[in-house]
Image 1: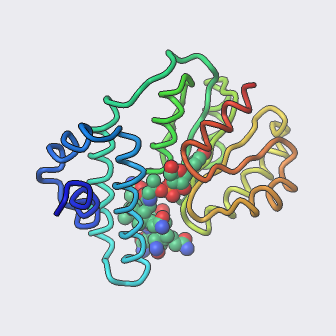
Image 2: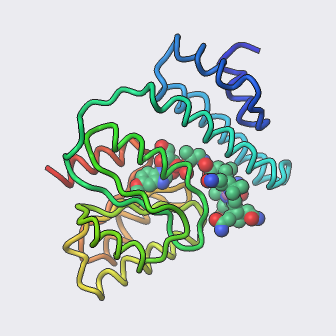
Length: 215
Ligand code: B1M
């Protein structure tokens, strides 16, 4: 197989042997971000489709996720870093009940490579932990990620909780993850939240929104 198809196949098949050599060869032809967006994420999309249609079992999905993480970790040091930090601070968490973190961690990489400080508190984070960390680190915005349909409900509950604690105007919220839609965030959730809530379809839109929040 040609190099870039092989990379995609490595994600689908969860094949880590030879991965780093392929990534090094790929980086001679295009930049690490394009490799992630065009090849590795294409592989994860196939994984999602196979899993969703019952053609792939969970342990194999996990293996693909591990290969994805290894690949991103290998590419990350080679990414362009524009600024040295200090443009503002973003808290990132995957919401309660949800373990998916590949997307959130990509947002972390993109946003922190572009001049922001990121406090990434991990997966399955209840709103209490999110708000405690936000206070402790004095963040400028809170980003929540979630991929399960039930996470969209958790996000709504979180926003309501933030309203009732009186912190909605303090924290603009960025939301992302495959189960969300722009309409749900910009219509339904925007009506719920007393502060500013925005939808990011990918990590770069997350960065753009962070630029807007800090402007
Ligand atoms: Co899960 N899973 N999974 N899974 N998994 C999905 C989400 C699913 C759609 C698969 C499917 O059925 N086709 C489905 C959800 C269905 C639903 O809710 N209706 C599903 C399911 C069902 C499950 C379990 C329930 C399976 C089970 O146990 N029976 C279980 C859930 C456990 C739990 O959370 N409590 C489960 C577990 C897992 C693994 C652990 C095996 C693994 C995750 C490993 C990990 O993350 N460490 C996994 C994976 C890998 C997937 C799929 C295949 C791929 C997800 C991924 O990493 N994509 C996924 C299929 C899919 O998404 N279609 C699936 C790549 C990643 C870069 O994309 O996270 O969307 P994504 O991020 C994007 C954007 O959304 C955006 O930026 C990124 C791109 O730049 N973004 C943000 C994300 N967060 C953002 C935050 C922002 C801004 C942008 O600002 C704050």
